[in-house]
Length: 129
Image (tube, rainbow, N blue to C red; front, side, top):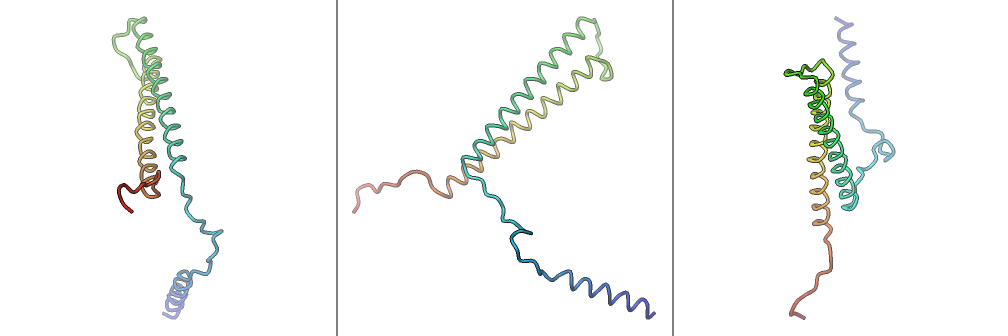
């Protein structure tokens, strides 16, 4: 009984000590990096072109696999054979490219939010003093 009581006290004391925040330095917890609107547009452009490239390579692999299967007179393409593997790889590249292209819109939205928050351009009062 005494052993259980001592172990329980030790666990409680460790739990209380773990809740204390003794480190207030910014080195251990750096502030979140905020990108500018221009950086978000650049990232969006890079992701769009990466997605376009992946989709292009995927379509070329699919065309090559279908052409190869047609030349071999294979009416059924198996995924473990040569053209089936190329067809699977091309389809996966197409899906990855579409993901990159769809994700690039997120950065455009972030840039728009940043531009609306900070304001763009010069405001000119019309017809007033």
